[in-house]
Length: 364
Image (tube, rainbow, N blue to C red):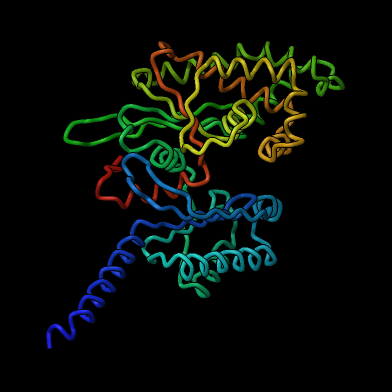
C-alpha cells in the first residue's frame, strides 16, 4: 500500500515545498507608491540583505502629474487630481497584489511633504482607503533628512558615513553619531543653497539684468559667488566636527544624478557609483568650455536627454558648484570614499524597510 502511494506522497511533499519556498520568497518583496510633487512613482524591491542595501528593483513606474503646482495655487488638491491620483494608485496596487503577490504588511504608500499644506488631504486619503483598504502617510518635512539617511546609506555604514542630498531649493542630509548602550543620534545637515536657489542668487548679482542670461556673464558671476558658497559650507562643517571623521560620503539628488549621467555616459547597474573629486572637476570643465559635447550626446542617449530637459547649462553649473565646493571643503578627502546614490526614487522605501527590520538599528 505504501509503495503504491509513494509517488503521490512524494509529489505532495514537493508541491508543499514549492509553495513554502514561494511563500517565503514573497516575504523579501516590498512595494512602495510615492505620491510626489510632480509624479506618482511605484517601486517593487527584492531585498537580499537590508544591512548591506543589497536589493533588486523588479519593477518601476513613473506617471507624471503636476500635483504640487495645483496645491501651491489653490491651497488644496483639485477634484480632477484626486480622481487621477486615485486611479493611478489603485491600478498600481492591483499590479502589486495580483502579479507580485506581495503581503499587505510589505506595501507602503506615502505622499510628499507638500501634501501637508493641502487643506483637503483627507479627501484624497479617504477615497484611496475606501477603494483599496490602504491608507498613506504624508512625509514629515522635519523627518525628511533622517529618512534620506536611513534609506540612502547602507545600514552597515550608518556609523561611518554622511549623506548630502543636493536638491533644487536646499542641500540637506546628515550623519549618525554612535552613543553608549547601542544608542544612536541623528545629526541633520542643511545648506541654504540648492541648484535653483543658487542659480537665482547668482543672477541677482548681475548689475544689468538684461545680461543675466548671457552665459559668459553668468559664468563670471557664478565664479565670484563661490566665495559666498564656500563660507556657507564652512559654517556647516565647523558646526559639525564629527562628520569630518566619517570615511564614506554618500551623495544624492538631481545635481549628482546629472553629473553621473552625463560624465560617465554608461548604464551603470550598481546602486552606488564610486567617483572622486577629479571626476567632478573634469565634468566642470566640460560644462563650462565644451557644453556642445552633452548637447550632441543627448541626441542619441535618452538619459542624457532627460538631464538636459530638466536642467539648462546654468543650472548644471550651479549644481556642480555645490557638489565641487562641498567636496573640496572636506579635509583629507583623498582618504575617503565617495558614492552617488543612484536609486534615489527608492530611498524612502528603503527607509521604511530598515525601520521594520529586526536586523537594523534605526532608533535614532
